Length: 260
Ligand SMILES: [Zn+2]
Image (spheres, helix red, strand yellow):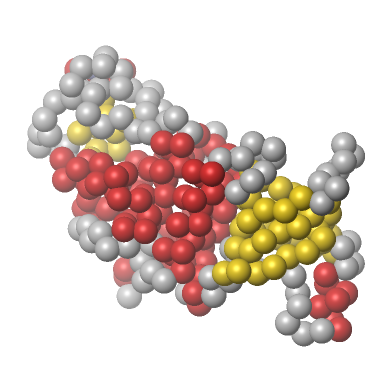
């Protein structure tokens, strides 16, 4: 029986001589991994038809997987190719990071409309952005919230008391503990921590409320942005239980852009 859903392509691998394995995140079914048979042979004959491009949103029709393996692509109807993403490396690697994290943290057969909307909104914002750091921060905050891991910024995550007001040197943020830590608990932090100024913490709370679309217009000074990026990407790495492969490229590019 055929299944149908709106989906976004998050990974594409060549398979054998003529086929591709595609990973989608879909609104109705969560993650879907399927095989697109013969798309590469087909591409040689008819230019332009090379199957879905990465980060494209469209309607997917497929034969669900049997117990032995992958689902099979029947039809793909492109709705939004997000062509802006491929035009700038900074956008492309930001999108790769978003896709990697979604693929790693989502499961087949476990849909989340909220996660799908976050993915779509983030990629739409990235496709037109000149810089992606605030968008990625808002994405990470949205993701952590959906996973039930929203960073705690008002209370100390260790003792539960209201955290201190920002002092000189800033407030401690512990990715492993899941948020801000008060001065008295500083010695009990496990793993690396980041110091955030009161301004950075307020900016983080603001980005959590606005989401990726409005994050495009949020302008932050490097001394606020840098620790926010470090804190949130570390929190996502904790959720993944490893450092994302693509994050390094995204960081290198943002730095190169700034140094120019
Ligand atoms: Zn404490």
